[in-house]
Length: 207
Image (cartoon, rainbow, N blue to C red; front, side, top):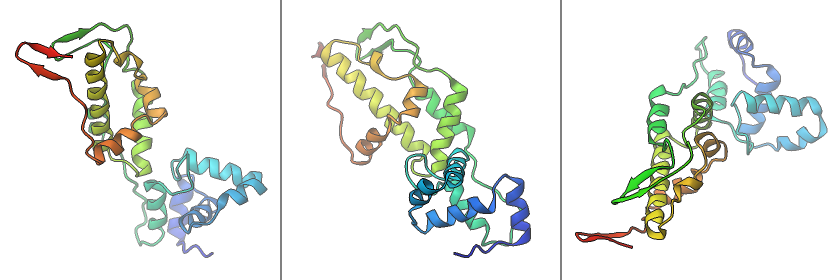
């Protein structure tokens, strides 16, 4: 497999810490070659693949290029001399962060639930993980926000229905992102699955 790389591309990528070995592996992955076979045979290749994951050029859980990895290979086919990769707008994280419950104490449909935990924690680490997820290119910030809103509303509805604070079982913000808790809820939102809601009447809440 031949990599078409100009001298100025080589200089630019090398300066950003991307070696020709890494570029070759990216080409293999883009062409759907099974790099795990190579990984098992050579410890250096295993180390290179770990570097690609750490640099967010390939996904952690599967052998596919992230948006950033795709941008690097696309850069080789341009006459542009300076590599510019997508950056996450800070407002995207801020919007998601503001939607994540601060604690498990809340009021919903006239019912108050007393909590004991702080849920919104480790802001800087959450920002880094949030950006990593977006740069993988599989989900948008809006999908993450909609999934979170859906899940929180579902939890609050269940709390009213079961007369028990279910929000207290929600993972803290960093664990939530690390464990990708949002993934099934993105699918529910995409499929327009409605949340079963408590019927509220003028005389109170029918539980």
